[in-house]
Image (cartoon, rainbow, N blue to C red):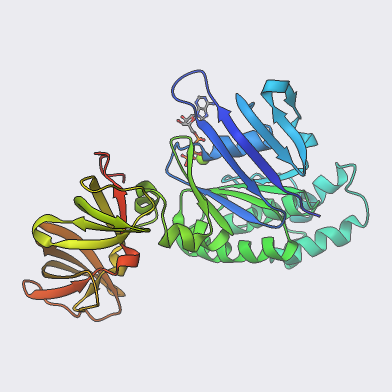
Length: 367
Ligand SMILES: Nc1ncnc2c1ncn2[C@@H]1O[C@H](COP(=O)(O)OP(=O)(O)OP(=O)(O)O)[C@@H](O)[C@H]1O
Ligand SMILES: [Mg+2]
């Protein structure tokens, strides 16, 4: 039976620089997959390695299945091999001199709790990862994607309490990555595995995660289900990192509940959802996704009149640069037809629910 992971106020400081992990707390209930998402260097791998026991944390507490495995303040540090975890990394960590079968059987033969019918367990696990017909093949004769399936099978075969995956798909070509991503979710759900998965790829995070934790500079900014990360980003960095590339700058006119009215200067005023305690007069930045701009439409609120400056036809979609009242944004429309002409007046609607206002702390663009 899978068991939960609890991380409380985890800190990891290396000899130099800022802490790599800076007060991170979250939990993974049994059977859930949590994805840590963030740019290079934000502390994802370090967090994972602390959970694995490969890195010694500076502070905080990590518990696996209710058992404290690391708590430096009390001198607790359980070794990696006693944590009952499985790990899959970016590089294909398989034993090159063995067959597929031998690779997957290896952990069962070398574990006290391995036991039972090893052959049946290996066979079932190879079926699960789609390698049922490859058991006797030398592992070096496999493709990258197949090797990664072997690595996954090897971590799943002994049913660890917790599976840790660090960018396991990033060495695969784009098409295979998408296929294995979808399959990985099925496999993990089918086994009821508890997983902590690390990636900088938002599409992987969305497909795989029951919840996504967005990290930046060692801090966890938001932990929520994918649709909440995408529709209610709690922080401008979360909005930007998950693809809300448009930013409109203005000043707060007023706030009511979780809605704020922002003065965009010559462009007029805009209504937006906000997670921040904005006050009248505050500088604000309004973020929204290019996909949520409705070109050529006049909705009930947030209707503006603009002009298409540039149009970039991309086959399956078209991106438009639109200017209105001194503000500029990108709009994206799906479909193989480019519907709007350049240099014509066009109305646009920015649905208030999909516009998110944040306090503008003078931060530079975050991408
Ligand atoms: N052994 C180490 N010694 C010193 N600094 C380290 C060490 N390992 C990681 N760091 C630093 O800690 C920070 C976080 O690194 P980490 O590998 O956790 O990032 P990441 O989010 O996994 O990035 P990526 O997406 O590139 O894999 C970085 O600034 C990195 O340089
Ligand atoms: Mg990493």
